[in-house]
Image 1 (cartoon, helix red, strand yellow):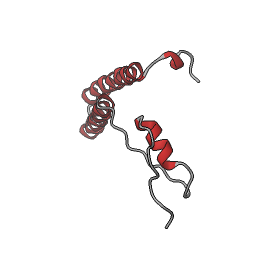
Image 2: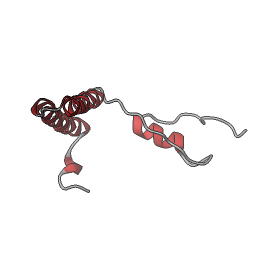
Image 3: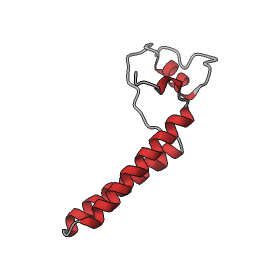
Length: 95
Protein backbone atom coordinates (compact mmCIF):
# COMPACT_ATOMS: atom_id res chain seq x y z
CA UNK A 1 0.00 0.00 0.00
CA UNK A 2 1.21 3.52 -0.76
CA UNK A 3 2.37 5.37 2.34
CA UNK A 4 -0.31 7.72 3.68
CA UNK A 5 -3.11 6.48 1.43
CA UNK A 6 -4.77 4.40 4.15
CA UNK A 7 -5.59 7.53 6.14
CA UNK A 8 -7.24 9.30 3.19
CA UNK A 9 -10.98 9.13 2.63
CA UNK A 10 -12.79 8.97 -0.71
CA UNK A 11 -13.11 12.75 -0.98
CA UNK A 12 -9.36 13.23 -0.41
CA UNK A 13 -8.51 10.58 -3.00
CA UNK A 14 -11.01 12.12 -5.41
CA UNK A 15 -9.47 15.57 -4.97
CA UNK A 16 -5.95 14.19 -5.42
CA UNK A 17 -7.00 12.51 -8.67
CA UNK A 18 -8.71 15.69 -9.91
CA UNK A 19 -5.64 17.78 -9.11
CA UNK A 20 -3.37 15.33 -10.94
CA UNK A 21 -5.65 15.22 -13.98
CA UNK A 22 -5.83 19.04 -14.08
CA UNK A 23 -2.02 19.22 -14.04
CA UNK A 24 -1.86 16.70 -16.88
CA UNK A 25 -4.49 18.65 -18.81
CA UNK A 26 -2.46 21.84 -18.38
CA UNK A 27 0.67 20.09 -19.68
CA UNK A 28 -1.27 18.73 -22.66
CA UNK A 29 -2.56 22.24 -23.41
CA UNK A 30 0.98 23.63 -23.34
CA UNK A 31 2.14 20.81 -25.60
CA UNK A 32 -0.75 21.37 -28.03
CA UNK A 33 0.32 24.97 -28.62
CA UNK A 34 4.08 24.45 -28.51
CA UNK A 35 4.74 22.45 -31.67
CA UNK A 36 4.83 23.71 -35.23
CA UNK A 37 3.16 20.65 -36.72
CA UNK A 38 -0.63 20.89 -36.90
CA UNK A 39 -1.05 17.12 -36.58
CA UNK A 40 1.11 17.03 -33.44
CA UNK A 41 -0.75 20.00 -31.95
CA UNK A 42 -4.06 18.27 -32.72
CA UNK A 43 -2.88 15.04 -31.12
CA UNK A 44 -2.05 16.83 -27.86
CA UNK A 45 -5.32 18.79 -28.00
CA UNK A 46 -7.18 15.47 -28.31
CA UNK A 47 -5.24 14.11 -25.32
CA UNK A 48 -6.13 17.24 -23.34
CA UNK A 49 -9.81 16.79 -24.19
CA UNK A 50 -9.75 13.14 -23.10
CA UNK A 51 -8.02 13.99 -19.82
CA UNK A 52 -10.65 16.68 -19.16
CA UNK A 53 -13.42 14.15 -19.79
CA UNK A 54 -11.80 11.73 -17.34
CA UNK A 55 -11.48 14.52 -14.75
CA UNK A 56 -15.22 15.16 -15.11
CA UNK A 57 -15.88 11.47 -14.45
CA UNK A 58 -13.79 11.63 -11.28
CA UNK A 59 -15.62 14.79 -10.16
CA UNK A 60 -18.94 12.98 -10.60
CA UNK A 61 -17.57 9.73 -9.12
CA UNK A 62 -18.48 7.86 -12.32
CA UNK A 63 -17.03 4.40 -12.68
CA UNK A 64 -17.45 1.72 -15.30
CA UNK A 65 -16.07 -1.70 -14.56
CA UNK A 66 -16.68 -5.22 -15.74
CA UNK A 67 -17.31 -7.85 -13.08
CA UNK A 68 -16.92 -11.33 -14.55
CA UNK A 69 -16.88 -14.55 -12.55
CA UNK A 70 -18.52 -17.98 -12.45
CA UNK A 71 -21.93 -18.49 -10.85
CA UNK A 72 -22.05 -18.09 -7.07
CA UNK A 73 -18.63 -16.42 -6.96
CA UNK A 74 -19.81 -13.26 -5.16
CA UNK A 75 -20.28 -10.83 -8.06
CA UNK A 76 -23.33 -9.20 -6.49
CA UNK A 77 -21.62 -9.08 -3.11
CA UNK A 78 -18.64 -7.15 -4.50
CA UNK A 79 -20.92 -4.77 -6.41
CA UNK A 80 -22.96 -4.13 -3.26
CA UNK A 81 -19.75 -3.53 -1.30
CA UNK A 82 -18.55 -1.03 -3.90
CA UNK A 83 -21.79 0.95 -3.90
CA UNK A 84 -22.15 0.62 -0.13
CA UNK A 85 -25.45 -1.24 0.03
CA UNK A 86 -26.50 -4.20 2.13
CA UNK A 87 -27.77 -7.32 0.44
CA UNK A 88 -31.29 -8.00 1.66
CA UNK A 89 -32.38 -10.86 -0.58
CA UNK A 90 -30.89 -13.28 -3.10
CA UNK A 91 -30.30 -11.85 -6.56
CA UNK A 92 -31.65 -14.80 -8.54
CA UNK A 93 -32.34 -18.49 -8.34
CA UNK A 94 -30.28 -21.01 -10.24
CA UNK A 95 -31.50 -21.58 -13.81
